[in-house]
Length: 283
Image (cartoon, rainbow, N blue to C red):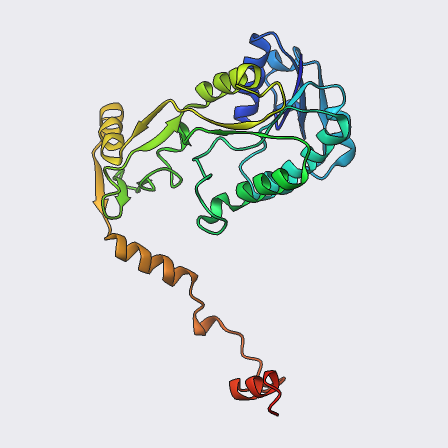
């Protein structure tokens, strides 16, 4: 069985390729620079297709020819997650490929609506558009946050470490006790290949949503683990209530009058009354 791994040169892509090879699959890679591959991995590939970008349609068509399935593990970038994934999906359709693992490996966004959380909007847009327009039923994998992101701004509590070595996690309301799902990339790679091979309905082209994780952790538990492993103190700091958070978010979306560009010298703006009169044909 031949699988195409798009984005193979990334940290997850190389892990996926190694696991696929260990399970007896043939692996073709798609990426911009084959030199980023580990030499031991590069020599075992069926082939490597070089692309200039996710818009390189010729490379996409070449990469999908003759494969039995595709795993798209582009970097978590909005353009790649939407434009890139859709273009690869269209190439897969033309080639008659039925098994397509979409770039996900994140928190479960299936209960969110578009606009609820901007970070996931491109994933939601891809899933909905594919469901309406594509003959392929993609596979989506929800893993929680990657373990290597737990102690970064992208993890729970937006971990910071100042110049004096003081570590801090911040939370709102009861966020310090809420559990966050997390997974290591090694676990994710092994389990993704298992889903690709044996997930219910996957090889039949039925797609689906699959959820797995290495574990779950609260902010307090993460702080304890950090202290044990690093030997350093860490502050878990409450920065406000849920109402405070809602107000902060509302302010961040509000257009400040000071940010407006004044163009009255070009044309004086019409009054609301004038516009309503015109709309109501009262002028």
